[in-house]
Each structure stands twice: as C-alpha cells, then as structure tokens.
Length: 453
Ligand code: HEC
Ligand code: HEC
Ligand code: HEC
Image (cartoon, rainbow, N blue to C red; front, top):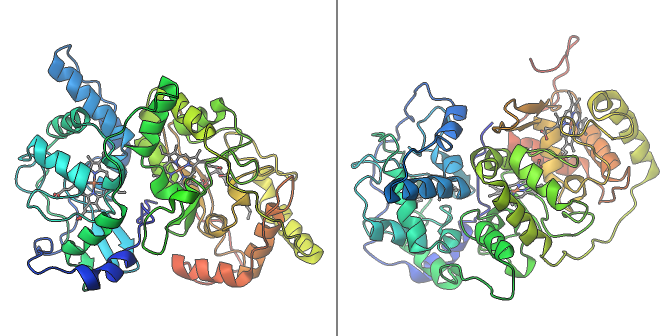
C-alpha cells in the first residue's frame, strides 16, 4: 500500500497566515480536468530499477548524469512523483491533508507537461525557494525547505538526469485545496517565517563523514520532514529535531540516541543494515519508511549509509519519558490475545525471528509516546518494501477483522510493557479513532473467518 501523506506538513499554517498575506493576482495551478494517471506495464519494482540502471561512459556528462541519478535516489523523488499504476516521475500522487489534496507534479523530460523545457536557473529556484517556472509559489508538501541545502552543481546534475528519463505526457489533476489555501501566494508568508538557511556548509569542527551524513539527512534525505514533530503552523519544532513525528496515521520514531524510544540500542551497523535492507535485528521498515528504503536509502553507497549513522548517533538524546504502569488486568488480557494471534510469528517471548518477524523486546517503535503507528500496524497490517539485497517484500497481516478495539488496545498495551519495554497505556477509544481514520470498519468475524488471502 502506498502512503498518501508524505510530509507531516500542515496546510493550517497557510490558513492562519493567509488572512494577512493574501495578495491579488496569485494564480492557482492551471484548471485542468482531473485525469487518471496513465496505466502502463511498469511496476514499482521497475521504477526502483530505473534508479540504479548503470549509466555508461566516462565523459564529464556521463559523470554528471550518474551524480544526478544518485541524488534523485538520495532525495527520494520517486516515492512522491510516482502514483499507483503511473509512470516513473510523472507525478499525480495524491498527498491528502485535512485541508484538501495536493498532487505531485510531472517531473519527466516532457517539455509540455513535465520539466523538459526548464533551465538550470528555474530548477534551482524551485529546489531552493519553492518557486515554480511561472513564478508561482509551490506548496511545502514539496520538500524544498530541505532541498535548499543542495548546491547548484547538485541541482544542475539532478535536472540533467531527469531530462534523460522517459518523457511522459501527463497532467496531474488540479489540486483540490479549500479556499483560501488554493491561493498559492499564501505560501509567501510561511516562507518568510520558516524558510531558513541556504546551501549546506561543512562544519569544520566535525569529521568529513559527519558532514556527509549531516548533508544527506538535512538536505536531500529530508529525514526530519517525517521524524520531527510539527508546530501549530506546520513547520518543524526545531528544538525537538528528530524526536519523532506523526504522519498518515503512522509514527516516524525518535531517531536520537534515546535508549528507549530512539536508536540508543542500535549500533552503527544496525542503522546501515536497516537503511539498506529495511530490516535488522531490531526492526522492520513498514509504513512510509518502506518506500523511503526502496526508492532511496537502499540505493545509497555503504559509505553514505554509514555517514548517516555517524550523524544520527551524534544527536543529543531526546529526554526520557515518565513511565505509567498499566493495570495488571489489562496486561493479562493482552497476554492472552498475544499468545492467540501474534505468537505464531513473533514467538511467545517476543523474540521473533530477526530480519523476518521483528523482535518485540526493547523495541523503539513500540515505545513511542504516540501509539498511532502500532495501532495502525495491528489494524491494517504492514509491509517491508523490496530492496536489491532483499528483493521479496515481507508482510504482516491485518487484524481489523479479527480483533475489537478493546482487544487491539489490550494487546498493544501488553507488548508496550513486556520484555524490557515501557510505554503509556493504549485506550480502546484511541484505537476506535485510528480505525475510523483508516476506514477499516468494525470487526467482521464469520464462522469461517480466516486471514486475508
Ligand atoms: C514528499 C513528497 C515529495 C518529494 C520527496 C519530492 N517531491 Fe517534488 N513535488 C511534490 C509535490 C506535492 C509537488 C507539487 C507542489 C505544488 O503543486 O505546489 C512537487 C513539485 C515539484 C517540482 C515543481 C514542478 C512544477 O511543475 O512546478 C519539482 C521541480 C519537483 N517537485 C522536483 C522534485 C525532485 C527533484 C525531488 C527529489 C530530489 C522531489 N521533487 C521530491 C512532492 C515531493
Ligand atoms: C516519508 C516519511 C519518512 C521519511 C522522509 C523518513 N522516514 Fe524514517 N521512518 C518513517 C516511518 C513512518 C517509520 C516507522 C516505520 C515502522 O513503523 O516500521 C520510520 C522508521 C525509521 C527508522 C527505524 C526506527 C525504529 O526505531 O524502528 C529509522 C532508523 C529511520 N526511519 C531513518 C530514517 C532516515 C535516516 C531518513 C532520511 C534518510 C528517514 N528515516 C526518512 C518515515 C520516514
Ligand atoms: C503471520 C506472521 C505475523 C503475525 C501473526 C503477526 N505479525 Fe507482527 N510482523 C510480522 C512481520 C513479517 C513484520 C515485519 C513487517 C512489518 O513491519 O509490517 C511484523 C512487524 C510487527 C511489528 C513492528 C516491529 C518493528 O520494529 O517495526 C510489531 C510491533 C508487530 N509486528 C506486532 C504484532 C502483533 C501485536 C501481532 C498480533 C496482533 C502480530 N504482530 C502478528 C509478522 C506477523
């Protein structure tokens, strides 16, 4: 399942600022009729293959194209610019927000509907300032607040590479944002407040490796776009950078070295392996992270994944959360449900089978203060995406049909407080909310209830 909200960016900010900053003459995106993304035979696997297709030659031009291809992977452009059943980079993926839907643009080499006719200046302006070719503001659902760290040579290389990809004539549907957010000029106010810094500059006090990691994480990788909590106006709460964020009814966990909720228990090799294969002895990458691994981090070099780890491990740990012990009765009920429906894969003592069924003891994903991601996983199931080194996807079944809200809450509370884990109680009403947001309906047992095929 492809996720629809990629960046926990809130359009609310625009509503608040818009009242003050709205300017006449701001043109919403051309009023095209919504069109279905083009159907074709390329599967998502083929899209990932495109990103690692060897570009032959030793000319400076070939080297630039290889650099551009690599940065397109580092920037995870494919995850957002590919819609289900659509062509690579043709866009049309719906990014749903509470205030309406934004569709990703066509960034193929097509001159009419894509960016085939763009100049290097225009492309740099889009990546750096979020300004489109007609001078219009782009919405920050496009991660230009991070991409502005890229140097001009890097954006030139990306454009050169994108111009060599198959041109696709396709106009994504017009955005469907409610007034006044449909007025692009409102983004100007947001930019004034939040668009900070420029191209990445090395910190001379740190090693070359650390600087490489900092660049990849805070520039193309835009990791904090998902892993940092957002403020009322939708921008990163920078004082809590990498403390974990909430998106698309899922949680992007704490990436600081906090020993419970973060990566404190992971070695450098564990981080590298997770980014390369989507799994390691501690966890499996589901939700939006599955696409990040498939289209981005699995395609980086080992040296770059190592550099990302070096940088993440240098962050200050997030503060420890106060624990609240759950009632014994909830734990007993949860333990019984666990034995019944989870232990067949994750085993009775939660040890699982590392790299296949993630071990649940000392598990950071389970110990996030916000349990939405766990509720989502139990209700909807999950899937680790495929990577060059682990080509077959791995999935966990959905339990929405089998467990009541109370049962999901009890089993979640139980595993959040077993085998070394400690995290707040999950309530049935919280689970009910997540279930309704996911549109999973109520439990539907029948005499023959089995698993989904
Ligand atoms: C988190 C999702 C996301 C990612 C990742 C992403 N984009 Fe986009 N991009 C969008 C959305 C959404 C838009 C449309 C914004 C709008 O309409 O205001 C967009 C628009 C653009 C545009 C403007 C096109 C036009 O016609 O105005 C360019 C250029 C672009 N993206 C390039 C890239 C490149 C290059 C990468 C990777 C380095 C990338 N994007 C990664 C979501 C994303
Ligand atoms: C589009 C949103 C998004 C982006 C961008 C993103 N992540 Fe994630 N990440 C997630 C989600 C969601 C999870 C939780 C996956 C799960 O529950 O299985 C996650 C999980 C992780 C984990 C595992 C944490 C744990 O304790 O299990 C690591 C490590 C990680 N991400 C690193 C990164 C790095 C490094 C980057 C940037 C290169 C990045 N992520 C970019 C959404 C994102
Ligand atoms: C058929 C085997 C199977 C069953 C049954 C199963 N799981 Fe899973 N589980 C998996 C697989 C495979 C993954 C890795 C893929 C993923 O994260 O979606 C996983 C992942 C998880 C994770 C994420 C761990 C991490 O660090 O990312 C949690 C938590 C979890 N399962 C809890 C449960 C609970 C609770 C139940 C019972 C309600 C359950 N599982 C039943 C196979 C199973």
